[in-house]
Image 1: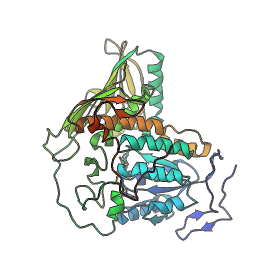
Image 2: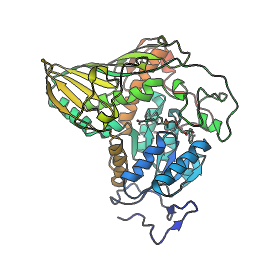
Image 3: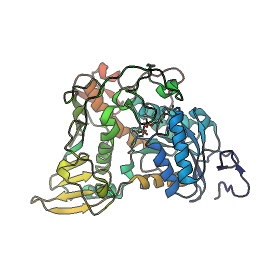
Image 4: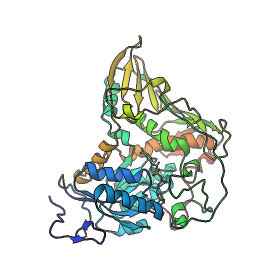
Length: 452
Ligand SMILES: NC(=O)c1ccc[n+]([C@@H]2O[C@H](COP(=O)([O-])OP(=O)(O)OC[C@H]3O[C@@H](n4cnc5c(N)ncnc54)[C@H](O)[C@@H]3O)[C@@H](O)[C@H]2O)c1
């Protein structure tokens, strides 16, 4: 089926892009090469190159609009798109204009995390498919709303946990399923990064070219602060509970999501013990400099060590990420998972690190190398839009992985405790302080409506 063929019957937009007759996306499959029109919401350092690459590695995919509340970043993104794709998308500040635009099939949400769930739900309600960056949520309640929205509005939703499209992740999962590792008894995941002291900065006037109220979104109003926000780079929002969940949400979320995937996507754990603190550098930031947690999955436990205090640990180097016959030096690999079976141990890397299984004598028994998987994830999203088949970054699994982050952070926030979790109701057992952190507060005009 040819959904839209613009050649010969399209308007050439003022921006130089071609757009056709307004068309609401049907929920049925389309041709493998039908045009897909995207808009980016949040054109920072992550979103801009990834949406550009998506247009390069997929045919017939175009970007109509760049939505950003920061005019500097929007201008930078538009110029990068013009340079790479030879056309100029329009700039809009308010994402509702994107949702109202019938030309746009799908949105690419790469705002800070406090905007992900609300923007995703609004997009689904407007009939758009969605790519939404990790960490998909800032609390457990939002994740359930995202799952419900995708289902209710019949949308394709790809969570930006790109390791889910890595072929070596599938082979690791098959290997564990085959029983060759024996019965899994313990899983250890690491996200141990370098860091330094985080300094508090004084509030300032809101910079020109920024809609600060919209940037804050549902979060409680606070004056502009350069420790939270930067006009030209990411800024420090990741260190504040209102906007994210620290290093755990920012980076360890990938490691734990990949670990869950190769373990066959277990449901929620029954309990979490979480510990953390700012004892390395003595920073005054809200999120801890270092934290550890233990999750009880019934027949095995999973631990995670995450933080910004260990400069000698190394993320997988680029040369190894892009070479499927090289493997990381596991002992100092900052973002690895160790899976202990009764018959062997598997070391699993992210970023294309691959996996290796070792015998009792320390010999390599089996292995599969990897390549950094962003491109596969981008292709899988566009293919899913066209085929209407579930993408690899399934929204339910994204919610379950993100919940590990929230469980670890909530256990830290209520005083380094063990918390028991009712996996059906998605609430804590006998801990009201923890239950209050299941959902954030939402300012008027920035609320996710209750629906199922
Ligand atoms: N999958 C990955 O490997 C990966 C890597 C890096 C970042 N990320 C994720 O991508 C997201 C963006 O990260 P970043 O480093 O680009 O952050 P960033 O702060 O540089 O960019 C976010 C952009 O969103 C814009 N924005 C904020 N509120 C908005 C609103 N209401 N409407 C429109 N735009 C709005 C900001 O102005 C900014 O330009 C984060 O969630 C981050 O965790 C994922």
